[in-house]
Image (cartoon, rainbow, N blue to C red):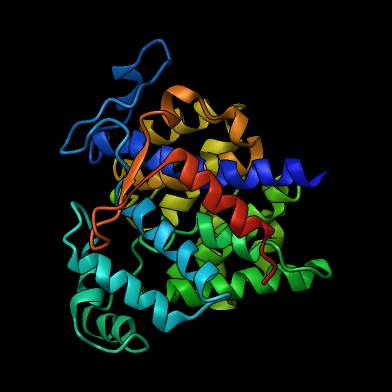
Length: 319
Ligand SMILES: [Mg+2]
């Protein structure tokens, strides 16, 4: 595969995730089938609603941009600096922010303790909030050269460290690590579905069984044992949406039709499907209205072209 194709997939992952986020946001907490009911002809639009303008991306994409820009400006993972960016953003009063993420970012605790302390106090920290922002870091760390096991280990380890900034539960770390690896495989031009067993083998022994359940070839959202705001059914639904469809558009429709935390499930699905199908598969009727406000950053708003430029820089950089 040539570099142009690879770059197109990288742009697909980052813009695809943002598009999924913005497309799914108006349907958050809706019932199953909500997208198809609204768009029976399959030609879904950026419709806005629920407090979101048409094409407006939510916290998922806003945090993904912060992750990507931190990696580029610090020339690698500087967790304290990335956490500082998250904090500045949270203080800018974003329209939406996950409960757990908000608690950790506004606690005043130091970056290397805040998430662990939250987990200690609450006992539950396996929300999908570290999964939702992973498209940018997945593109960046997919670039590690070297043999397969080393490339897989490098991206999965980076994913765990970024997830740990806001999520103390290792279930969230491992799920984010799996997503990083599936996007890495897709950017190489290979089928991420065939890479699931390899990624599962690379996660912690005591976390594997639950992940193996939701990533099994016969799993579907109807089998979920918790709300898809949790990390397991969120990634499970994204992988299921990819597995059971054949286009970028159809994958997002399936993801949003699953209902629940539709912006995040669609953001994760869009990142994966975008890496598989490339940016050319993303309809312009979705990228044209797409915009990503960055609260806390002086009214900055990124459009699709700027997200694509960010993706290209993340892809061409070698960590
Ligand atoms: Mg969101």
